[in-house]
Length: 319
Image 1 (cartoon, one colour):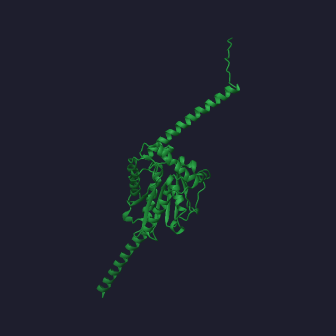
Image 2: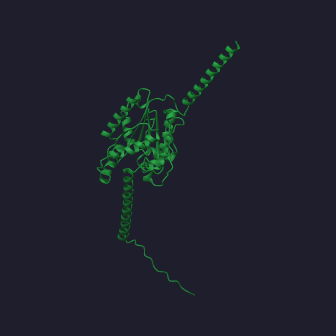
């Protein structure tokens, strides 16, 4: 009898240990560190201006690496540029982006993004989640596309915007989550009044503690550089978003670190950096020309009105 009781006790202990192990694993999986059976997700992104087709692969690879090696689909926002030295095409891209921002113009790029997001939703199913990343002009295209999505479609999409030409908030669209990152010196802020208002007042859009507009301190000190998606300022926030994604939507076994992503992305050379650098030089040249013209006009008006300042020498008397 003693042997039978001992055997039963051993069996019970083994079952309890197994239960504890399983409960511990399930508890860990249910916490913010990951899930054993995560919901189906899809990561997508849409670019800003000045991206030729060959410029899409490198950022897509970096985003995939940051988000744990998942497959990332992109919706290409085409450029008017024919080559990396086509600055006229770059200017045309800027004009088109202005029509999106100022007039809310619906272009084929908006239609393509609507189809892209709906295809992603179909892949993840009714209980899945689409995580959509938008940069610069891609954010205003996303804003316009959201106007054509159904509320039940928006509820299954998270929006992560970097340097967006439009802020996207849950007060306007019923997205599952909206977050808008802006470098404090990003030139795009000049065309986004809602973001400027938030920067000046410290106001955050959204319910409760959920902040939907977040400002980032510059990591380079250069406005044009800070606007780049894979440059240090936005890259740091992108890495954080990747870690959040892995903790919520990936099994702990599938999670990867992102410590090596910074050095990796720093080796990526892609055209927008050229475009920003060229734009900065042109802007500086225009400012200098305007300054010279203003000084010329001031001098001309002063001479015409006879208000020239005459300086007479002062004779110093010595004792």
